[in-house]
Image (cartoon, rainbow, N blue to C red):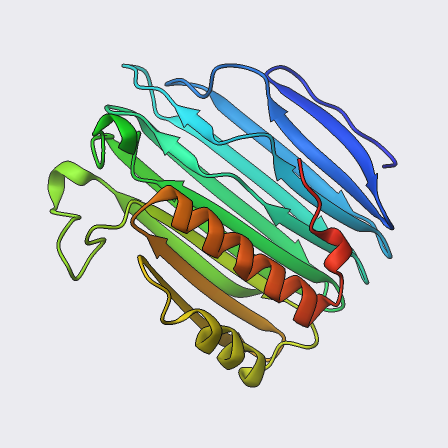
Length: 249
């Protein structure tokens, strides 16, 4: 790592993972509170390989101030490679949060991205009891908008447990893979590999040559974690050819 700087509540732990920089971003506080504004800015230089992850799920607490805001900015230089696998965000009952991920990638860079959301503290019966959750994931490649995912969920305004919406699912994840080996065949192979697993639903599609998106929902945490890890392992091994990047925290 050429440069690292963090202010509380963030801490950074960096390790060697074969030929990669393995970075764990730690939120040392009890979570995110109303009115908090957290920001991360990451740049991966040309030829560098980095693996980023969080220490644990990010808890969002309720409050009477403005919604908590989370902003991530990433820049991938030519021939840079970045793998991000984030633990879920958990909005507590009454919490309100807005998160935004902006990724600027060179055409020759490579990316594995996975973010996740829980519907609340499900073990305490708090499914869909948060006030509001706003999310935006934006990927630009060579300056052009390539993928945009944007939604705002306000559970009190609609029945999210309807079968045509979330149903019985309480765990959700989006995965993006940007790599020269991605094509319709690679996306189809991943889709067929995971489409009929019990207690979860996975859909994979190639947005364009070199980019695929996978969406995962599950009804329980163990299934969600297992399927998400298997999806990551399959993509990293079959597309990136880098099984050594599957490090553990």
